[in-house]
Image (cartoon, rainbow, N blue to C red; front, top):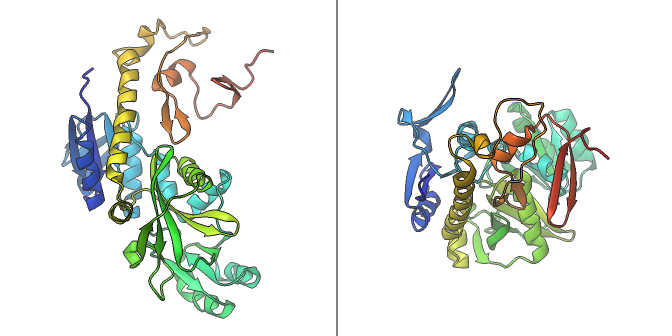
Length: 371
């Protein structure tokens, strides 16, 4: 296996994407920029194939795939096909979850990430029931949308009700969220790995409640406290992404996560913080890629099981092998090397028992632990 590293950025060609690709060239031996719109994914009897300009995509050690919510299915398909072949910072499922505000909200709740009180309505009748008990003002959002688009505000039952016809005509569920008064200010944090590498406060222009810079808001550098940093990292971990923009509000209850962005713009936050965020991303991608290649170099030759001394196909035999490797972290989550999955023969359908103590993790299929 070559020690040279080959990376790629799959994107729509935004300025931020080009910045990351250029920064990656300081660390990787080769970096290609691939236009997302020119990729196709073929699914057939012999597997999933990713084509670029009608040819099989090259093999890479690292691929950073990103883009708008309009390409959610494509990004998930690409990641599903390629994530086992190279290091990719975003789990395939994160594209579907992260581009849907409802699914994101549910994932945050499941992982104990604080968010504003939120309700889901699919009909006018359900919405009116919520309108009668919620505190005003409120925010109403469509499940999909970015940069503050698809967000509406109502300061009373009457104004909320007047918006119902437009909302229900689109025949899709929508979120109703209690508005947290912050004087038009929110916080954008960029999470890379298990760290917040840059953060800023964003102030909405007068008469506008959205603080997004794309909506005319202004930003200034802002250092989060440790509690807020942990919440931002936990939100990214809950989504399954190593690179993420996390939007938060400072409330009387503490930081509240309102949105996550899998393809955050870097221009605004780089300008106000003077931090080279693209370089932070590129360096983290390189370090994780090198760690993965090191494991593959040790265990990933022609037949990894034979290298470990495991031969034949007798699945009834009890095998015990000690494997020396580095850990691959997605945020604070540990991604085990593929060889461990192969040897253990565990899959998502299995229930497991996990025993943890400092410096040790023991995972066993449920029902097989002997006392």
